[in-house]
Length: 393
Image (cartoon, rainbow, N blue to C red; front, side):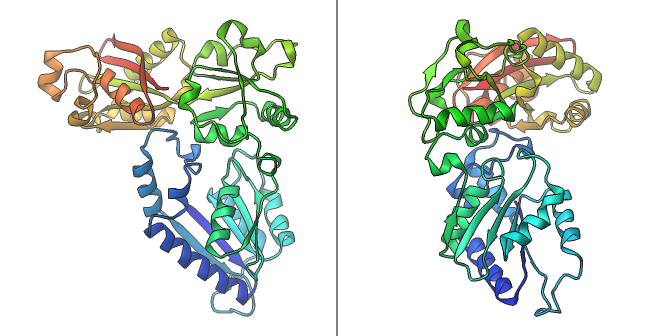
């Protein structure tokens, strides 16, 4: 996680030093931001629910980078001589995770305004007054994690958190956070606002989901939602799915019962792959596309391509993974064999890899790491490529 902190007075800079020291100490003691909440599991990383919480926390903590910056004549030796606009532009271009201004909100607003894009892309931005009395969540409260960051930082420096998002003030359900925590992708932010408005009016949400709702983090304030079946999907306010026929289906001109029909892509699907040595990228692509199309699974729902570690350097798979921007993750034979289940078996495959099945076990193992796995497509052979698909439900 990369955080940039900038102060405009010597007092503010000393506060930034204190903040950094306390933050890093909290991470070392296992009380840091990553231990407290999983909502920083950013989709920017393309990892979704793939990694276990413990591994993810360890990796993020290890990569923690808090940069301290001063822009004041009181500290000439360290003060950045560039224009604030130039500094901020650099941080936005570098995809900084969070920016902390220690100074006035006016300075922060003017600094970030030219570079704002969309709530799904903008970094978390918070403001702290130089006396350390208040911590304000200014931008990307939900998707960017600014609200969580505000609460965390305010505890570190014993300040008052200021969070103004309506759903937080009312203790209501936030579809942004719900999607982020459950590996779901929001397809229409306009419809997401309609969902939030409906919740704030005290109305019950109607939800269709391919994922068992009991397996999702439901968030405070969601209340008693009304489950909707496939036959009544046009009544749904929220549609959670990995199926292409549901995600790509055109919305009717007029939805019944004033249904919102917000589609959340369940990015919880894992494609297991086995292949002959030297397989081409073209063969992998053809097999992958045919498999998902015949199964009716949206490509946007795939969180990762997975296999045994013997294939970690297979060039055809790596090239496909790179071109499609799909993470390729491998597991050891011991990890794959540890999973119970009824999988296709091959003595030849076991003699070569140490496990009787690669693609099914890989897909199911990946899905099982964050919930219950369900195999959607059992082993399918496409020439020199074998594929299977599982979902974390």
